[in-house]
Amino acid sequence: MPESTDSNYKLSVVIPMYNEEAGAAECVRRVDKVVSEMGCQYELIFVNDGSRDKTLQILIGEKEKNPNVRIIDLSRNFGHQLAIRAGIEHSTGDALIVIDGDLQDPPELFPDMVRKWRQEGFDIVHARRKTRQGISAFADARAKLFYQILSSISTVDIPRDVGDFRLISKPVIDNLKKMREQQPYVRGQAAWVGYPSTIIEYDREKRFAGEPQYTLMKLLHLCFSGITGFSRLPLRLGIYLGALLFAVGILFVLLLLIYKNRIIAWAPSVIAISFVGSLQSFVIGIIGEYLAIVLDHSRGRPLYVVKNKY
Ligand code: UDP
Ligand code: MG
Image (cartoon, rainbow, N blue to C red; front, side):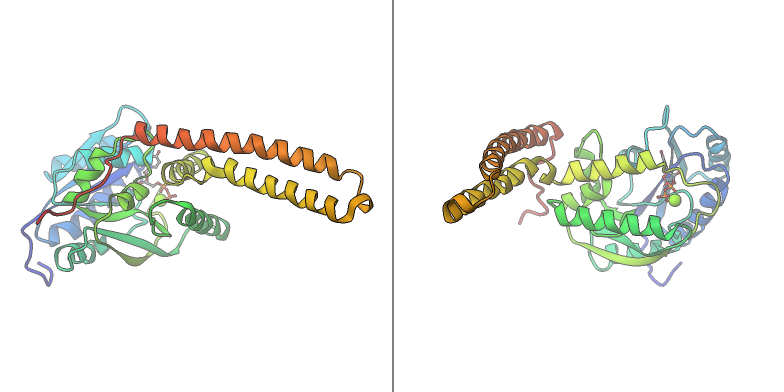
């Protein structure tokens, strides 16, 4: 048992797996070693996301040796985020930790994460990537830029440089289960739910084995889900653009009034184009606002989340 004797809880670990045959057995071994030493009840939920290699067979072999292993085998490749969702929906623990199956995120952080939850009262413990090994400087900069853009335009406070490696407690799990959007961006959803949260930092390791399963298309899809799910800015662009063009039109009207016939001959055309363009952008922006409301309805997120009643 570790330093804490508090073991009266059940921990679920959700591990999405797509073509991870080279590292699957090591992943089970390393995660199980950490969790079994914590002394709590636990389940390791491996979600096989339509792997085309021997990942499933290896996991079935591991399950025969270890009753804490559970396998959710999806019918095809649904993608990382939906695999995580499937794991969350099948979890039965008092808290849950999502971790990648390639051992880039160290399971050795689990005791610290659980301590933040059990002893310090945080319902969400995000793990922030201080450094990332095994990826190019370009990919590192690209990831940082995306997190920066998203956190500056999103309607909720989504922590930067935080992937899906996090602990969430039962109240957060229950609320996440109610969020049934089609293209979930789980990191945004966890932030949306609220509750006290904290961040611990770690150095992201290289993959233990195998190749990255995130293709550029999958990465773009993830970015798109993040932006469309948690920002209204793209839908509002029309209004901002309309206002900008209107200001340009007004500026040229003023220039024309001030400088009279000394002004360039094309000024009236600029004024006409600016005003017509502004009107069109504005109307599109207004349609965007209505669309945002329709989108919110179709997502069906809860209107608010009650934490306690006294
Ligand atoms: N993964 C998945 N479905 C996919 C792509 C990836 O379940 O369609 C899993 C993959 O097996 C790994 C985790 O998601 O456990 C993260 O994927 P990857 O390591 O390729 O992403 P990166 O670490 O490069 O961001
Ligand atoms: Mg990885």
